[in-house]
Image (cartoon, rainbow, N blue to C red):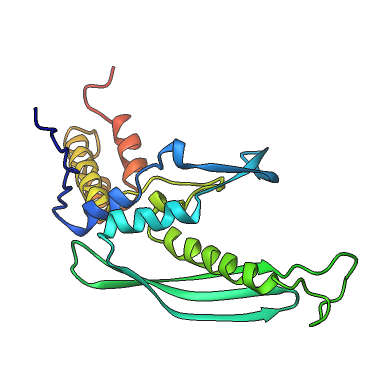
Length: 223
């Protein structure tokens, strides 16, 4: 009996907004790691720092962009006792068919020899740069990838993490509210100048929620 090979499902996106909504979908909780040594305050409660590993970030960049991504303009420097890195992450947008760029920064402390407090050539650990530079680069890559969307950890550790809503969805909702407001206005007790002013505000999408709430109280069939 031949072994069946299950192919990865190909995801098709009709437009850029649809793809962006996919990039902002929630992260699989199994992929999220926690650092027990770092506590942060989230929703008024101290919690362990959440993060995605650099291996996970790189794997997802491969999966989402079919490996069409690269790191460019990599620069590093030493500030105080830390190695800092800045870089540009470039990915090929599968819908827009262009390369897009996201910049990222990262830093990692330089390890000193035991008992040393002032950094100098003699006081740093012999492999401090060897360990610190890749760590700072990984942090910078994570920082750049996060700006692509929630799928790459954008909203981890944030108190405020609003759901992504496409512009076309917002326009659709606004149109529906306008139609409701106009229907309410037609069946309202408002007349003359009041009715004309209300209609003008509705057509300009001005304070639609307040207008709808007001008109609901001004219906001719009100008991």
